Length: 287
Image (cartoon, rainbow, N blue to C red; front, top):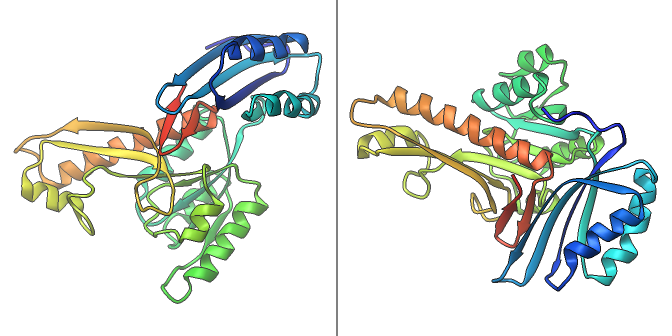
C-alpha cells in the first residue's frame, strides 16, 4: 500500500483533441500551482485523434475549490473535457438489486473491508429480500415495486433517491429490470451493469440451463455502462472461466455468479478510482 501523502491529493482526468505538448501543458499547469505529480498515464487514440490522461497529484498551495476555479480557462483553450476529484472523498454510490444476492453481498463486503473507495448511501430494490442485508451494513433500504403500469412512477422515485443522496455512481447489481431510455440518459456515464456474457446466444430466463444444454466450454461476465441500447453500453471489464461436460447446471450457475462478482467489483473499483474514461462506444482504462 502506498503511504498517504501529507498534502491533499487529487485526480485530474481529461480528454481533448490530440496535439503536440499536451503532457507538458498539463504538468506545467499543475507545477505552476504547486502540484506534485504522483502518478500519470495517457493514451493517444489514433483512430479518433483524441488524447486521454489521468493524473494523480498532491497540492497544498490551492484548495479543491481554487483548483476547480482555475481549470476552465486552461481547459477551454485546449477544447478539453475534464474532471477533478479529491481522493479523500469516497464516491457516493447507490445499489439497485432484485433477488440475486451475490452482487450486493460482494460489493458491501468489499466496501466495509476498505477495498472500494465508496460511500454506499442506499440500496433500492423491487423486492424485499435484502432489507436485512442492508440493515446489517447500516445502509438505508428502499423497496420500490415495479410493474408495467407503475414503471414510470417507480423510476421517478428511484431517481429522486439517487439525486437526494448525491450519488455519483449507480450500480445495477443484478437488478432485473430494464431501465427506460429516459433514466438511462439521466444516469449516462455513472451507472454500471453486470450480466453473464452468453448474450446474445442465450436470452431470457435460465441462461445457464440453456448453456448447459448446448454444452458450452466458456462462461463469463461483462460489466458495462448503462445506455438505452440494452446491454450494449461501453464495456469496462470482462472475464471468462472454463467449464466442461462434468459441470452441472448448479456448477455453471455458481461459477457464473463468482465471475460476475469479480468482474463487477473490478469495474466499480476502477470507476470509483477515476480510472475509466468513456471514448465513444468504448472505454479507456488506466489501471
